[in-house]
Image 1: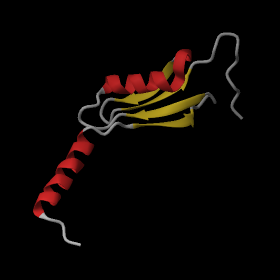
Image 2 (image 1 turned 60 degrees about the vertical axis):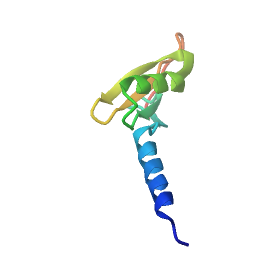
Image 3 (image 1 turned 90 degrees about the vertical axis):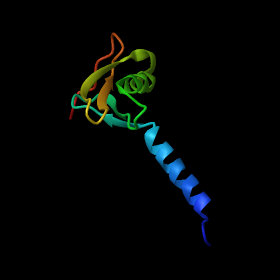
Image 4 (image 1 turned 30 degrees about the vertical axis):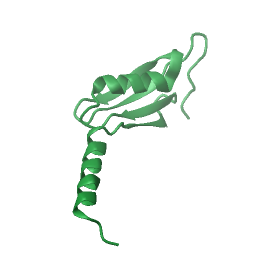
Length: 93
């Protein structure tokens, strides 16, 4: 199958567009003290640190979160969901 020059140009433009607006990701993990946490990445030229903060807020919901570590260079952060009052954090094994 042969791709025409016009189709190649469209494919290249679509690829570039996707890399510019890449939305990042949220992956579940556990932080050193045993709480559930997330690694939030916000790649793409149009995503800034504010989009990471929004993703972090959505991951933990109304419980809120604490930033464990973050990097402005690669626009990523590790967060831990806060523990509701009266509940103890799990003890590490």
